[in-house]
Length: 319
Image 1 (cartoon, rainbow, N blue to C red):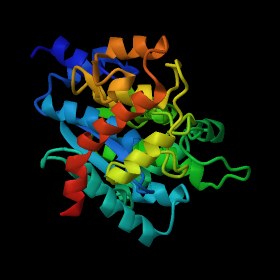
Image 2: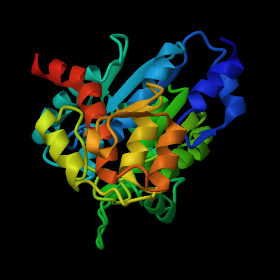
Image 3: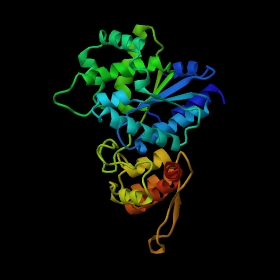
Image 4: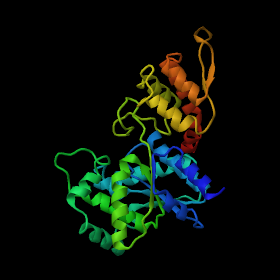
């Protein structure tokens, strides 16, 4: 596979790559490093699985994958005590393994290096170069809204920037909520003579309730280790307005997880409602848009797919 073909594969299902010319140079390395950081703050859900899916693609293309279990970041973001976060981090790690990342994946705890003298020196350096306004703006989509924000919220993006240097990252992967922090990192790493990574951004999944973001704190998610009963209950109650394609979580799940992995979606229906049907992506969109596919039928297809797709995760987590 040549470099252009690799880039096409990397770009599938992403919103942007910054920038493509730099990515070409990265792909010439023998084993470039790609990383994603996750706050250990709750259940691992389909929103996280979007980036894991892309990490698996990068892994197949020869990248060394590093996953930062950002325990100190979770603490700074008010996600629990140090002890609670440590317990959640272990659970999160097992979920990521269950999603199919191979044994070469390196899991790194933030607390394992974020107190090192070299690390803290770089944090202090960047603190003198970063305005409060810019640091706060970079956290808009990452931290909870707070009318009286803590100092921690402006340390967070500076630490995330230094993480990329400490982990020797060539590619930083994240959802679009990470974009402002990653752009801050691209600007500031150069100022302290560190490598500037390529940044890849994936779309955010809407919550099952139609909210703009699937989130464990909002309860509007499918956890990757949810039981068959929970998946069924959550999908049946989910937001899925008739004929609407944009911002429809069921359509997003189909486009993000179903069709990258199989050509057609099987939808089981009673004979009196037309019987079983298998739809390609284009057929599903057209049938749902014009009213030939009922929301409950779409939900049934998505529910059945997710139960099978996440079965290996449930089995792994039960071991």
